[in-house]
Amino acid sequence: MDFIYHVEGGDFTNAGSTSSEVKRMLKKLGVSPEIVKRTVVALYEAEVNIVAHAYRGDISVNLEEDRIHIILADEGPGIPNVDWAMQKGNSTASPKVREMGFGAGMGLPNIKNNSDELNIQTEVGKGTTIDFTNYFTH
Amino acid sequence: MAEDFHHALKFKYDLCIGCAHCTGICPTMAIHIEDGHPQLNPNRCVDCGRCYQACPVNAIYIEQDDFETVYNCKYPVLLLPSIFTAQFEEKIKEKTILSALYHLGFKHVFEVEKSVDFIKEEMQKTVNENNGFKPIISTFCPAIVRLIQVKFPVLVQNLYLLKPPLDLTALYIRKLLTEEDNIPVEDIGIFYVTPCAAKIAAIKSPATEEESYVTGVINMNYLYNKVMRVIKQGEYKLCEDSRTHNHRLSKSSLNYTLTGGEVNLLKNGRNLAIDGIHNVSDFLEKLEDEDIQDIGYLELRACDESCAGGILCANNRFLTAERQRKRMQRSPDEIDAEDNDLLNYVDHLNEHKRVLGEVEPRSMDKMDDNMAVAMQKMRKAFEINQNLPQVDCRICGYQSCKALSEAVVNGQAEIEQCVFVQRALEHSEKLSFLDAMRVNIKIWGAKKNDPAIAKNLNL
Image (cartoon, rainbow over all chains, first blue to last red; front, side, top):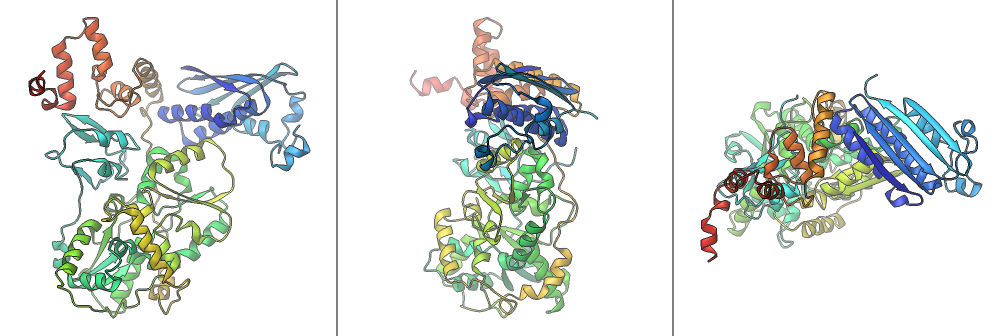
């Protein structure tokens, strides 16, 4: 089953609606609670990344009986150094943003920890595509 | 599949007018209409009682134990939620109400919240020392425990497995009467007065394998009527009970049953209290979706205004809560073992305070045990739903278009039950008028589809 959701940059009010929708589908499918949780955490993190940093993006969800494959493609600033951003604690957030408690450098590492396969493609000035898969049986 | 839940909510079909208000309000989509009457899915219902409140003709009732069992019992004692006395008009004093209860045959009356003074310490300690799942979710309200089992199985691991006040106080009563007063255990009957259906269901079939200490359950509105009658007819004698003469509860014990009662016991950290089952459901969705950090404890209650809004309460919930708060103003901040004998039994309570066994998740959302089949069903239901009008009119007998599409793929309903689909099929001559009528009669019964209606309306 395939679904596409649109995400608008800056729309924090609706951030999380895709992960909520996906969660409902996984529950219907009978996916184990731990895997539901992992998927929702990874997707929520990636979804909020679009809202916070990009202009807009599309989330394509491909759901099969044994796995879920999600592609989040955004138009936005891109990530200058992905390997660096993948390290826990690294963040491009300004000191001002950090003072508010954001930008702890947990975003990408959190997606990585909660996905079975992760692929990130990014081009500075154009956008980022995050592509991850979670399997329902180990 | 585990055994079906026991339910205290029952339908009286002879009174039911088949209006489907119950179908619409149910937070777990547990009710649909067939043959003109509601049908309950026992694995979805959580006994929250919203349907009972919504029914315009009182066709839903709550089963209770026969009051005769009290008279047949050698040593009946009453386990009374403090909210009971708050139902009465203010001019009827607590002492009068208790005297009426003794007149009805109860040897002693113990207020349920006596054990809150014990719980208070426990809760604070548990929250402070919690290194496990966060937040800890209260198990005080049994409708919420069941809601989490069926709708939020991920959160079962967060449930706080400390026995609620009802069980702890019952534990104390049993110990006290057998050891201090030497009453044989088989003679003792502990009768709990319930403000809601969920508590009955929890006593008759607990969420874990543990058995209840409660002998019987009496509905609060039923006892209210009995007591009112005794008082109005002046049959009682003002009297005191040597065992429970100190009917003082601390402020926080009285507050426990109202919204915020648990959270107010906690001195530090971030703790939240939410009442109303639909509000709770919304919040738990959010809790599942996002990482809401640092909440130590969640107090969740199915009824608006918590137990003051219990469906078996006799009075308006705001007036009840008001009287409860007035009693709080007259009550001491702290109570020690001298005024609350239960605190002399802390060792015994400590020994038995934990709920035995585990609360099992029992997801109602899963479309099939086999994931491949579930996938097919989901796909099919999705396709059907896309073609339904999304009016959620309930004419098909189900709560929503989505609910109908799922019932269709599970073989429980026919797509022709949708009135819009019927019209489309009639239009393309794939369904005869009479067949459509037959479908409608199957859902709503013959009376609502009687051609005589046109004549009666002079049409």
